[in-house]
Amino acid sequence: MQAPHAPQVVAVMGVSGTGKTTVGPLVAEALGVPYAEGDDFHPPANIAKMSSGTPLDDADRAPWLDAIGAWALGRAGQGGVVSCSALKRAYRDRLRAAAPGIVFLHLTGDRALITARMATRKGHFMTSRLLDSQFATLEPLEADEAGVAVDVAPGPEAIAERATVALRRLQGRP
Image 1: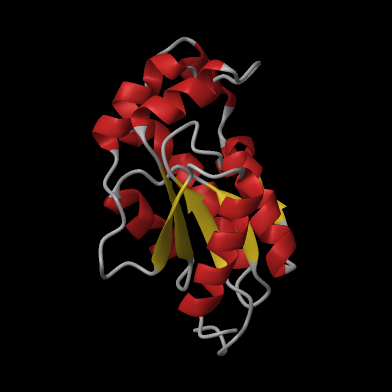
Image 2: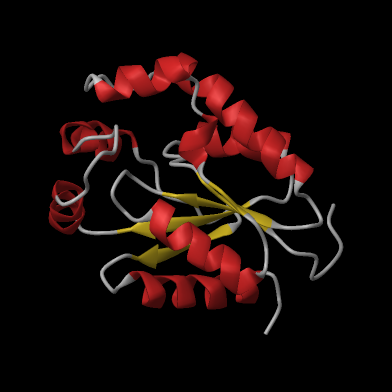
């Protein structure tokens, strides 16, 4: 268990297009901890599968979640922020088993807004064609899960500010 007020390890979660890769580094900077891009933990086969428009299944996600969990465990007591869709409770449970104390920042938003944002995104392997499967898979944070939900309607800086305040409050820090 981490000491009170030790820097948190935060997984920025949500469906594709909510801004995990944009907001995550801003939150990490505000918290004074390093950021890791969750997509970098995917094996090449996963990226190829998603690039072809095929959703990942649980077997595809297992090594990816394990790699993120190992990174989070290595940051315990030092803090860090990592992006990870973590759409299902079982995925978050797997991350918590690997890295006890990890907390989740769930970026939430209206489907139309997220679709519009994804349409302007260039060069990303995750296309808006897979958004329906992401929303179908999404299991929002439950009351017994350590974390906070923040709406993505405002700009990235406002989202990061709200998230940082909520995460500090969750940890009992001003």
